[in-house]
Image (tube, rainbow, N blue to C red):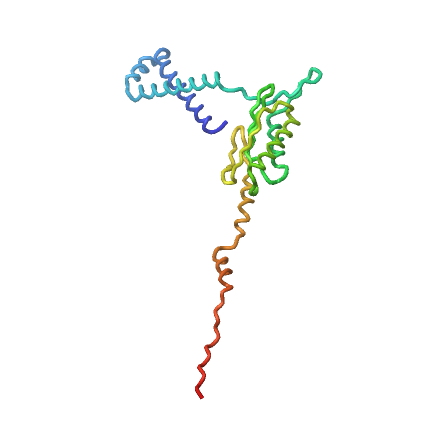
Length: 226
């Protein structure tokens, strides 16, 4: 769970607890009169209303997630053999796609997203980080064909779509997310290393002008008339 989600849950729970306690004390407990008088104070009443609004918003979000959130599929059924089921995990599919993209060493799979249902219908999206200048059309067609054939060996005919996205090294960042792992920082550093070895502009200019020479011989004296 990310830090933002954790913070939202803590705030939601505290708001619900405060609003329920402030309203419950007006009905139950030895301080019912004092709690009722506090509701007449504007700061206290505003705080209670804000907590109630936050609680209502949180309940709506939870209801929406419960009704419309998609179920996370960890394994996909590939085939049935003699009454048994052969399945493969999403992580295995993502690892196979990464292995295919990085086989020749010219590219890195910076991120692989696998969308799958329990009984097939697999969609794979790969972000490709090239280590060198490549023809995106030609290389993309080659990788797409290799991915289709390679994933068919793992998933059979369950693969519906394979998409590729070529990115630059500067656009790839490391993010320790909950479902995804960004990679390719080492490749970006390797791509920047040759540029650091280039000579400085001043040295280039010096090398270019070093071929220009000026004659430094003494001028000849004029001949005397006989």
